[in-house]
Length: 357
Image (cartoon, rainbow, N blue to C red; front, side, top):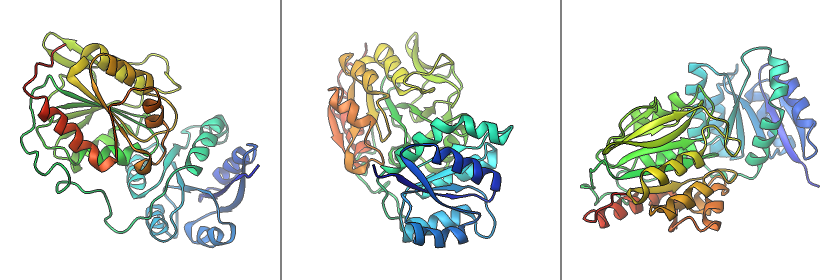
């Protein structure tokens, strides 16, 4: 069996030691080197040719973001960020994902060594996912087409709050969601989003999206009326659900047990959309590992919703979309850059049809 070669980059000797112990305890992976800073890592990358690099967010000698940006431009490879659960740490982590990192894990707040050991399964799983991720070479300022893309002609979409866009994503989803939302006009239908992400990072993610997009984006608080031109992101501590209150759609948070090992879960959101919105909704499933969302999306389809999935070529990890497609839950499969246009074209084409459940 060919093992996954991992290079650890962290300025903390304690974290390097614990990460090495966790990774080497897995039968399918080996640590091929450890580095206290990016400069040392640069030489080790050439020597060891790792499959995955774990990278601390804040380090001496060279900023982790600066190193990541250079790495993705000159020698693209799967990178898993190791982040602190602080406001500054979460902001930097969001930027790291934007620069091309596959995913991140958080450092525990208390009792670092015992806390990291409890994360063994999570760290190992994320390294396995990262090793299979599709990494594209980045150029300065590179991103998907935005306002000049497929939505250019669609400047007068429907504004009825009865129409909804329901989105689910996981690994690679922070960038996919950004590239999807950034193309939408300010008066698009209301949007609910579940992205697998721990508590403490979803608010920073929502704030970043709000600054970049024409629409308003916020971390859902529960009890909000879903409005056109607004997107509501599931907080890391709760499932996000769609409910009805009279003629209005509302958000609801639920701290029930994880579903498919996730809270928030895409299946929980999609199931609530099937029950509460039916054919008023368009479902979108984006890049991510696992099968969360496939069953809920099939329920949405049976309830009359129109569903789209991101295609394999544009996914970082073609797991969740693949499962949804295999279950028969989707109507269309398209590259990420085409999905916003397809969604708005569907609403425009069905704008004169009564879509109440």
